[in-house]
Length: 403
Image (tube, rainbow, N blue to C red; front, side):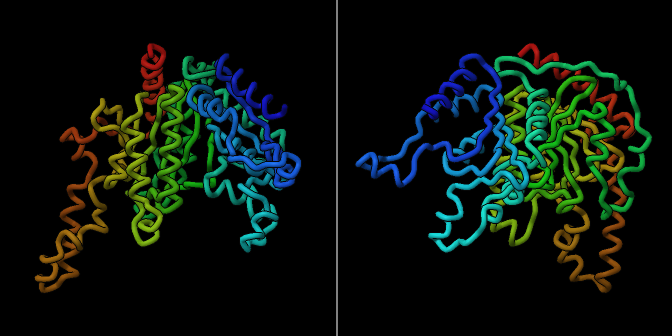
């Protein structure tokens, strides 16, 4: 009876195009090894109603709250969502619990095996909260940015934050020294409507920030580099997170704003072992396939294949750059020795010759030279970022509302 009730709830959400919130505590499968003796036979497992779960993922916003120990089918129902939460210390999630895991030699307690500290770092679950009340509040806020279904459009809210607001702090937020980092979250808070930034998945795929926000009341999806982690380089998990988020925005018709500071895909042995290039290309594919309007702001770096994934270059480029912009196929700092290897080897003083080459290249790396050749559409005063993005949101939502 319990499982039939689950199926009815899923069917109701799909048929009436309603957002779905699952509150899960337990397995949800309704069976154990002990039940086989009562039944008198075994069976090939199947999950009645899983087609409804898939249909809802394709149609309506689905939020899953793990509110206690959750295993097996219960865990699967948490993961089969657009946004998922665990309560710190109260929720655990696993394919099979500690007693079963012990059979393969893993002697871990519930928190070590599947606590929120585990799953908010590997991307199985989006976020952790301190209480059930906070979980409910975050679920409500997540849904406030989305339509009831893919057949509808999200709602513009009243906004008291002037669209023309110019933040003086944006002039100095990016350090002049290229190796120094800064807070992209600070930029986001300054650019979007005050108090509107709702970040998701902050503990995994950390080189990219994924959030919902508003521009003059219009809801938008925000993809932003985080230079404080891996310098903003996209590793496998970051790419996976970016891909999933872009697909979510596209599915529910949210225009995307991309704040770019990307030195490229992560390199090195670990990056190759974890398949960074495969996940990176999948993220790039998602950005190219997205049908919603996208605006990009190049805050600092855009290098290599990852840098080209800031937007679909075959569509109209709604793109701005800050004067701190720095771009190319390879960073000059790392590519000079490779490109000029034979010339350096032949030089009487390789170190001095290398410095001379760098000086020549630095003279041509000015973003204004790129703009003069229309390699970037506009270089803007950072203080104008919010007014220009509010203008983008107004135009983008005309397109979105027309379908």
